[in-house]
Amino acid sequence: MTPHIEAGRGDYAETVLLPGDPERAQWMAETFLEAPRCVNRRRGALGFTGRFRGKPVSIQATGIGVSSFLIYAHELLDYHGVKTLIRTGTSGGLSDDVPLRGLVISSEVRAESAVSGQVFGL
Image (cartoon, rainbow, N blue to C red; front, side):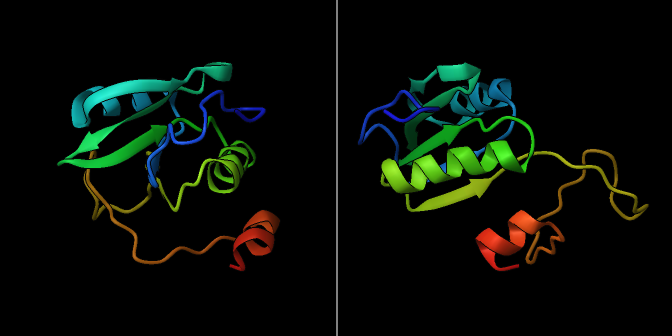
């Protein structure tokens, strides 16, 4: 148990998907995971663990913004034995080349924030 996550050690899989929205976390768990179980409800940031194609996977809502994301990332990595974090979510775009509800998969990221530079070396 940590300040923002009520789950115990071993409740999270080594791979965790991180949507911002708790309702999206629940939808993802109910839609994609086999036998999902809720492992966190603290502060309304729902977390679930189940199996995807037979492999253990967790989903944890992070709330809005990089500050909230970093709190959950820190606790998952440093206290819950998580090895891989995958940010999932939505974004807006200005390009006419991408249709509404289009899918974009990033191969690189560029961030110009102090947090990105200090934490990730970007």
